[in-house]
Length: 482
Image 1 (cartoon, rainbow, N blue to C red):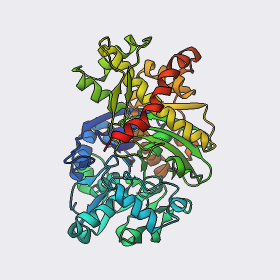
Image 2: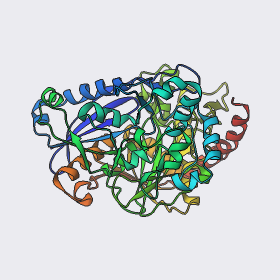
Image 3: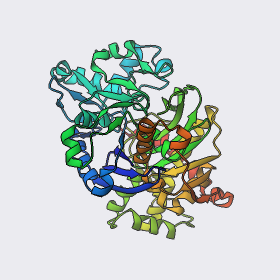
């Protein structure tokens, strides 16, 4: 059996899989995000460790006793600054933090070939601009920094004592030469750092250390190997068998991602398309990234005084055939693909006296779908054909939302058994590969198909006028957002 742990933004999830990769048990523990100032988004790194312990200990003790290896996945880009004692110097700055826009421009000016090296624009979400911001605004903390770790790798340090990372997660720092799969001295120097500040790099299935004996005793297992793991998106892709050129997935978690595997490094930064390493040797991937997806449902349910997103989804289905003008622009935390705009904020438009809560709920689902349609258009303009996507994440539970997404994106959506498990499943698969030597096709099978949703041309035709207005609304909203 193998344990996969995913350090997410809203919680930590732990799963145990059997020898065949099937999920035997899963548990989770919540996390909270701090937003002390506009554009800021932070978490206490030790809360990740505490939630990891809580999630693992919520699993069956009998299953824990049989675990042979552990894989880690996690939210990408978070900057965890450690001092000489390996303790955090400040709260971690998260992937959806937007404070470092000025530092992005300075980095691109300092390293003119940054986009060619990293395959990406400099965006506030990435790790390097966050360190540049700390260097400029908190110089004493920057001077005290001895190591910088990503969220899952801080948990690794707590679990094993090792400072290590994998290539898929490290590709999101803006310090990696993504094509060469190694740290870039030029990019590190541009933020006042060098390789001594960075963890060792490994491919996803490689063993980086073993579980500390005292934690193994607490968890009721032996000091098993821990593998490098993956960033959350790459791990989620492995969980649904996205292993080869052209295979793709749609992740509907706190953020939303369209992920397509590629056999070569093919960057297209002009439209904020991400090009990163995959979690397996010799593979890369492209992504369109949207900072708010299922989180919009949570926000809207609270704003509409509904018990939760399930009730919002039920109301949205009531408003599915509406002819109203209501629009929702889902930019609660800014946006990446294709706008690269950390300052843009969400908005409802077109409300009238006749607007109902069901209309608002339907507009929220459509708005997230329209944002993803902007992203898939950017991927297609980059030369990436996309006809089918496997769906993972909490949003994968709603067939009605799937119908909207399939029609707006013009793709076939495939729903797989266990698709809602997400990155923790891919992390467990990587542990299996690292411990047993199993190949990717054996260790990362595509789960059985639960349902398929095809694009509905008639529904797409009804959505088209609202999507045209959605696209026209972004520049107008951007012009008044500060």
